[in-house]
Length: 304
Image (cartoon, rainbow, N blue to C red; front, side, top):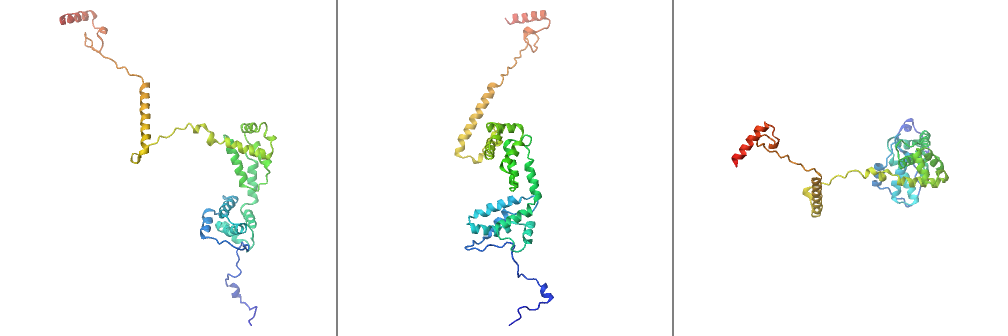
């Protein structure tokens, strides 16, 4: 029987070994485990990656990841396990290195993973900055109600853990819009928005933005000229001929209308003087009136 505790040399301690290696994420034990498909892993890697950059939004990454993974339609137990197995494939560069540096087996639930992930990439300073952006919200000059409300809600979504109650969210928005917008809100509320509770006020603002959307209500969009449709001659079909004939009729009507509205040009009639052959009528000839009359009378007598 060999020695259970063999003496190890200093060289033995220096030899690399894979023994004892464990993943950071300790997967829960379960039955009927659904195997991961390679195309599912590639889908996560290509469509939902997070690098750990300051410009990236970790909350948005979690939303995108859950939207993708939960679309696999798994049961509760397999959903938790699949999230843990796939999340590591969504991390790249600095984010992947962060996960590898955590103690082996330190993450056992999805709650553990998301808590540590947000603590690393959404530090308290970032939370304070975004919460301050909400508190200091201001409607921009020329900004419509719908755009201001959408921008305000975007600020709220950037920091879901802002801790601001619903009534205070409505109050902040109401207090920081311009007087015209505030008057519109009050009129829609039938008096003052302050007379409504938090839920009613939020619903009112949601309804107002539906009717204030500039992309539908801006009359200038309806006044824009429509580009003419040109049909390629080499791709005309039988169904195109009525359209072409209609186009020609419209063209003829337009030409006729323009012809009627244009002023008629009166051509100047030019005659030769029978006295001096000048470019004027005989009665207006001013050459030696008396002599001209005698010559003219004589010529007319000879002709007779």
